[in-house]
Length: 233
Ligand code: GRF
Image (tube, rainbow, N blue to C red; front, side):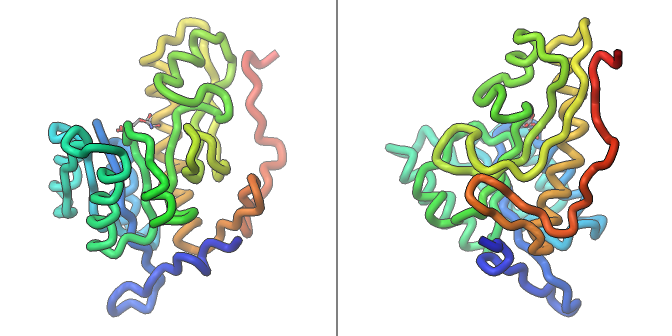
């Protein structure tokens, strides 16, 4: 399935350039949101953040969005009887802003079929682990406790499982002997801020194709000798 056919980026008014409207769902600090906004504003992604929705009223991510005059909504999931009605409210807001791609960025809720059917293969998530290892909460802590030597982050399509959808991009970082959950999280987060905007750019450019579980990226260069060994022996 070529996703550009399904969710074509529209031309930005007056520019003739393709321009993708992204809705970002957040619950917390919003450093990934910031990275996406910064790349959009710098023009390195043919996209813009059309709206931000948080399920937490005190999420710092909201302040980041407001600093850039991006429309924000707070929807407290506790005010809804079930996941489906919460998601239906999100879909309404996303549609009001003509969102074409939804990016989960530190959003701590599982999405229901209501969202998945409203945005088929158009919901992305970033997870701080090399999936399928360490899905779920506190992935960096799981990695440290397991003793892995290489950790990282993953951008994937969202499906009905937990962090289980087709993988689009991953970045790896070494894990050192004295790492804590915090030090590893910081190292991983730096990579998150690179790969999430890159994936959104590729999506906006119509370069992402999905064949079953495999995501193919047109014009992607295969790394020739870029391999990470830890410890380097
Ligand atoms: C990131 O580590 C992301 O991978 C995970 O939640 C964290 C969100 O960080 N899903 P931020 O809110 O973007 O700073």
